[in-house]
Every structure is written in structure tokens, then in C-alpha cells.
Length: 462
Image (cartoon, rainbow, N blue to C red; front, side):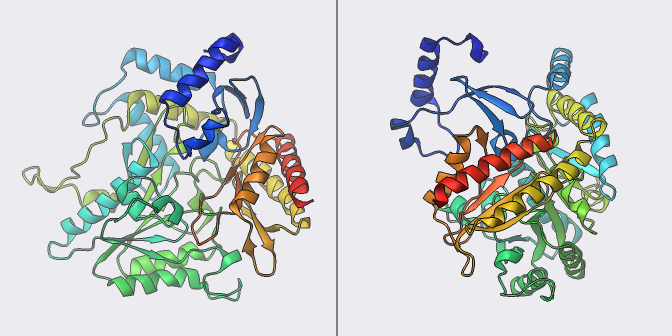
């Protein structure tokens, strides 16, 4: 139903049903006792309308960084409609035309990788990767159990129990333990809050060398994989320095550890290249994808692996335990892959990776101006993916309180711009606003976003 067609009575009834029946994500529902739920009804480009007719510039690409090509893409909707009319679904034990074509497209975009396994969400894509690591080594070394997965503090890999077990954000994990055995953490790669008290570039990239320390602590014969968000997203928008991933890869190869790069957020143009890892001299063994893969027009994710990893699962059909015994009911659904194919065409033909790079550089330049405010501690990001970290004191880097940050976020929303905030990953650290506008953003959009942020900071700083 279009918001223009909604009468006040209909609006009130829908809001009542929302309160009565809907369990929102990431939401404390007690707030709905004093305020009404937010209901979005229409989008075009970067602009959203809510059920009351209010318009917002969405600087979050759908709230969780996934509507990469913007709202209102008729050609994606048309591609899905035509495919659903032709054939909506068959299980992934067989191929279908959009899935085959999109698999070929993804592999062409990712030199060095050779096979793609489709699923439905980023959490699921990472679960598949963990299972692949464990089974890969059990197939390769019959008496050697390299099953442990290392993960980085401040990274996030999903909400399922294994993904949470590999999660480096404390806020996400509270209340859900105990977690699975076989997962271990090592330090983050945020220069602004260096875990080693060093300053780049005179730091020997200790944050990378920490991976080797963790492998040795756990035992090299037991560690099978390491998973990392190429750019830490919800943990603070943290792009590691250029030396970081090549050093990690060298360590991984030394100890035969498979490198999994979680590109759920960074993939499909977000950082100014098609994939975030392409900013670095690195060749991952596995890459997980979701969000921008179909720009959220349909649910779709994938785990992409090298031919070497895949070939370990190609064995005698009589051996029922020697293939990847996994299925994702809707993974690789024909309609979702039709959406993804059209999404990829739009990104390439409209040069949205390049727009992300150019407008992203403009975004970071404009955000640098905010350092004039004493409460702005750091600005960081890459492409159309940026964060502003707020502190009470620049010298001590004491984070602002969560209520203080929420006042800034609300002040920005009051001006018709939606931004996000990061999750607590270190004690007391929940103090970064994140920006991820659709890849069609213009410099005018950026000016509006930054103006709203500046005005909100002005008000809370008085």
C-alpha cells in the first residue's frame, strides 16, 4: 500500500498492529509505550518516506548498509517478476539459469576464486565457511583436526550461534552464552585505539603479528581458519593499514590457515572497488558475501572459495562423508539471483564503484571538517563507508556516553537524515556514528548529510 493512499484511520490501525504483533530487530519495545514505531512505506534513490509522509535522506542504505543501488529500481523488480513467473524455485541440488549466470559473474569479478555456494544471509554464509574449513582439513588430513577458527576483536559475523562465537562485539553476545568451543579472539586493527599503544607507521604492524601469537597459543595443528571483516563495520568502521592483510596472509600460509574475508558489508562497491579486499595485496581462500549482492531487493548470500578448497570435496561418490553435506533451502533461489544479476549490471554500467570512490573521497574530506569540534576524536573510512568517533576528551580518548551519542543521532534525524551508530565492542565503547549512503549518492547528498551532522553536534555541544 502506497503511503499516499493511507487515510489517518488506516495509519493508526497499522501502528496499533505494529505494536500488537511485530517483534522489531534490535529494539527495546518499551520505547513504544511512549513513542510510535517507525514504519517506512516508500523509497526512491536515497529518499525514504514513512507512514506519516515524512521524508528522510537515508545515509544507511536501508539501515544495515545493503540497498547499494538505491531504492526504486524498476529493472530489478521487473527481472524478479519475470523469473518468478517462469520458475520461482527449485532446490540447490539442481542449477537454474539465473543462478548459473550469476555464479559465473561473481567468479569473473573475483580472480583467484573458483566456486560459489549460495545461501540466504551473511550469518549463514559465514556458517558455511566455518563448516567448510573444518571438513576441508578433516578430508585432507585424516588424523589431523585443524578445526579452530580465529576471529578479530570488534568484528561482527552474524547472529547464529557459531557466528556469535566468532563475534568480537560484546554487546551482541551478552545473554546468549555459553558459546561454541573452537573459536578464539585476537586484537583489533584500529590505529586510533591501538591495542599495543603504538603509532603507525612506526609500529611494526603489531596488530597483524598478533595473529601469529594467537595461532601459536592455540596450537598451529588445531587452527584451521581466521575470519575477518575486510573493513570492520559495526565495530567502528575500521579500514586496516595497507600492510595489514599481506602480513596476515603470510602468517596464514606459514601455518596452513585458511583466510576467510567477510565482505558481507564491503562487497559490491561499498568501498570504491567491487570488493573491499581489492584495496589490498591479498588473495583470500574464502570470501563471504550478502547485503549489496542483490541490494536487498531479494535475500541472497554466498560463500566463495578457491578451486583448491573446493577440490578437497570432489571425491569418490561412494564415500558419503566426503562431499559438502549442506543445503540452504532458499540459497540460490532463481528470483534472488535474477535480482543479483540485474544489480551487478547496474553497478557496472552506471560506474557505481567509481562513484563510490569519488563521492566517498568527498565525504571523508567533508567529515574531516568536523574535527573542528572538540568531541570529534577520529574520522575514518573508505568509499561510501565512513565513521565519526566521538570522545569527551581528545587526550584521554574517553568515549562519549551512549545517551549523548543517541542525542546526536536523533538531532540528525530531526533534520531529515538517517545515520547509524556502532555497537559496543570494547568496554564503554559505543561512540561512533556510521554512514553508508547508496552508491548513487551525489556530492549534494553528502553536503546535506554533513550539514545535518554539523547542526546536531552544534546543538549538543552548547
